[in-house]
Length: 459
Image (spheres, rainbow, N blue to C red):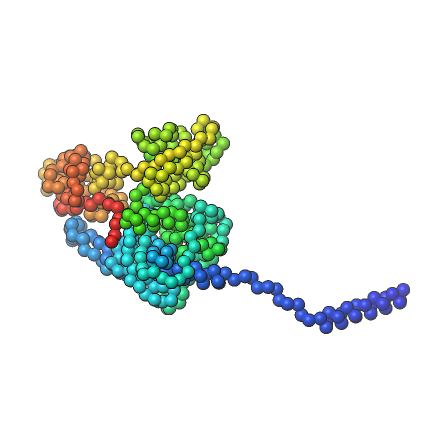
């Protein structure tokens, strides 16, 4: 027994000596760096400096506004992505360049170039710039229809003007895609289908790149969510325009200088679990058709009210906004496949889509967006008043831009007395170069010019 114990003890000593003499193990392999990917992609990202003037209304001491529109000079900053190096095309955000008189682009090598605006589309917040051709690796365009929540992403841009002010390169942040198909983050009536992600972006990052782990461009950074009362800065909720949408808008801007939108001719709403129970359907998501416009593509191929759209071409439909956004960027005259659920059966229709036609109210586009009513009242200053009173004047309307407010009364349009909405609409319908209105506000009166929106075309 003692012999066995001695042998075991000697064996332990031998093993210990062997281990002590053995060379130290190599350290574990370092985590692979994404620096090469960043180095290549960032060469296509540019810093943008804009100089321009923003039109403002001139307020008088008596709280009225004149029809003069002085301007406020500004200097702005943003980011952009060179998507065609041979032709020098850059995609950025419309809100960065829409009032710009001069635009300077700073490249990755700190070379500063004057850029030209090809055009922009406020409804999707996409703008296209042009600079001389560049000899740099062209960023690859990904497929935003293939991205999924949970995918790793990089955001590259120019927050707080850092990339120019201190001579450093672009700022790169890392995160994941948090959600897709975000549309209700703005009060503007735009065509939004945002990618939500949590990589940090800040003011100045707008127009920059959202790329995947293969270095492919999948989105154009456009907005960050800032809670009310909070200082401007990142809270981990940022948004990007899908590259497929940006690419489609860019092609139209380059070709036409503006965007022509296609239409299916339907009015749709989100199909909720509550509606699913009422319709006795198992599906929980989609777009429920509530109206079919007469003689529209939808009417001609047999779509009906009560149909639930669940797919357009290869893309699944989860909400009403997707239908509007997907169709709007399709080529006018192209054929799409719309898949619906009708009476618990799945049916597919091939639809040739047409250009979006403005509704009847567009004939009175100078008055678009306002709530008005006829008014007849006596005033100690103005005597008998007959006209049209403003009850709602949203910020995006021609009336708001002209300085009108709630309570204002229009009594004359293009020097013609108007006693009611019918007469006002008749004058508006026959006006082509702005609508000159005489407005009563309290004890004062003033003229204002209403200008209707037109497709953007910048040369």
